[in-house]
Amino acid sequence: MLRFWKVSFQTVAAPVLTGVLYLLVFGHVLEDRVEVFPGVGYTAFLIPGLVMMSLLQNAFANSSSSLIQSKITGNLVFVLLPPISNREFFLAYVAAAMVRGLVVGAGVFAVTAWFAPPPIEAPIWIVAFAVAGSALLGVLGLIAGIVSDKFDQLAAFQNFVIMPATFLSGVFYSVHGLPPFWQAVSHLNPFFYLIDGFRYGFFAASDASPWLSLAIVLVALAVTSALALSMLARGYKIRT
Image (cartoon, rainbow, N blue to C red; front, side):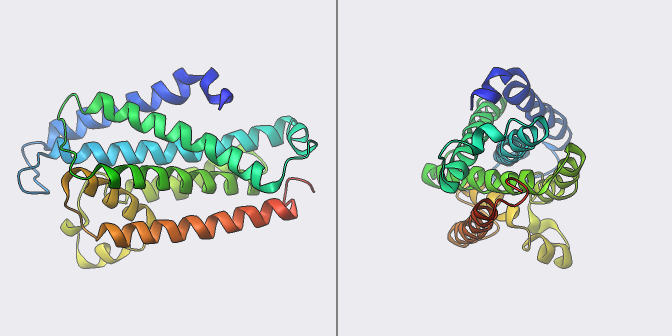
């Protein structure tokens, strides 16, 4: 956590500014043209999606970049030498990623909500999906950091997997407005359930049941966590 706090202008302030810019551009253009939920302006609808998108991308970036930098600079050996268990290693990287993701998400919400404060109908759902989403992307970032040997491999994972999955998860639109084929494709994207469930906490309206969304997210978190712990136990691309 100290690593990203030391450069908080880059790791926290910059993503918050990016979220605000998205809101200003899309909100200004589409505010009077799109109404997804009855009585909810497009700018207010957009805010939860931007918050979750920023949270997910920064949770992934923290664990993945922390590990790949340690591998490339060679200081990972100082983490491996002490008697730290695989679970402690896992929890340290994922917890730091969760903190960064949640701090960035809170920052984006604090600034964007000033433009169009969204209602908060079910705060428990908001917290549940924020925590689960930051944990899931923290784990995915850890896996990407383990598998990658250099920065361009990590960048490919982020640019061709994480970025498209977040942008095509309903951040800027409701999947009900898509053709049937693309609705079906969207429901195969686990990030869709994170965005949709998180948005339910604000408006008590969503494209899928929040219980279904939470179940899918928790299953994805369990599977990816088991994979990451297995890789750490074998020392895959870390100890060998």
